[in-house]
Length: 445
Image (tube, rainbow, N blue to C red; front, top):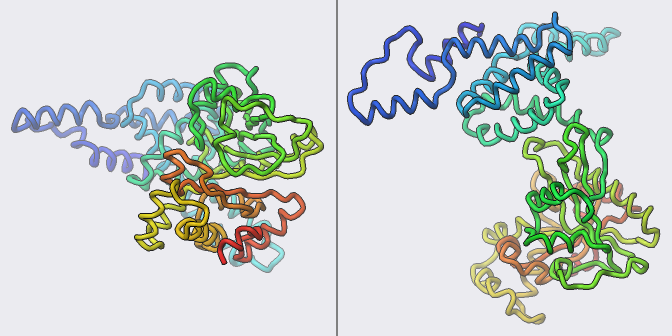
């Protein structure tokens, strides 16, 4: 589809053809609806062509990187003034128009298939890879060269996410951005930084806003999480210096924690760091919706473990205290109704109550034996087990909050990072077997 055809198709879908006179509405309501459609619709044909020309100008091979960056800045400024439908037009232009040449791709693919097993295979593969690179990627590269380019693109992709389900035409742009971000935000380009109570207030405010596991109740709560026996670390990118991309909160203790309540107790005295042997990761939060699909959580934990070991040589145990967000929804489809009803009163069930033992047993099955496409059902379990941890303990009443009740009837779980067995655990998971500790296996049996 050439430029003229593409614009004509867009115009016909969004409004009447440019040269056709708009008929008078038949009623007041219709006139109002027509005005709203016009005021909130996408760009007029001439503006659409101008925007397309601007995008082409950004990737013009005859202009320098500096000039390309300047032109990208002009588009960034335009985007800041644009309304939602106009921004959507930009997304569609980038997604639909700047594609790889299908004829060149087909030709290169045919040549590569013919060359497999011959001395020309490597060269044919290079030609095929180059043929599949879209001009869209070059647009993103030119934007990234601008000082504001990467923050702009991350924000743009975050804004684009809700539209993907209703408009699959945007998927090409989304996937291209995810691919580029995985390179630009590689762990080699990130800085691990400790966040403390002495950090700028603007940064601490972002921790409060981005915390995704245990809501922060206020500044005193946040101060408690940054006390002397706590550590908070985040990954930062040079182009987003004041924005933690992901952060983890750690409690230094002398045993594995079984409840979140004492960890969040603002009145509790700080632990004796000279006796600390255990690091508990009790909250991990990603902050940028625009970086969805770009994984650096596993690298964060590994870097934090190395940093903690250097600061506290006595540390021997590294474990999480994690929620089980998918448990209750799974139980609602698996467990008998009478048990579900009893579990609503989980806080009233004593230690020997059969309903209590049943819930622990079901949780052990869910975390230790249930797989979908070779991966654990629970999203938090997928993350930690994929990093080489194992399911170590399940705790009754670990999270008595409303959120904890809605997710898992108050249950929490420890994932243990045994540094000597991470590779073994990953191999077990790859073979379809979830690594679990003896206590969890006993609950299941």
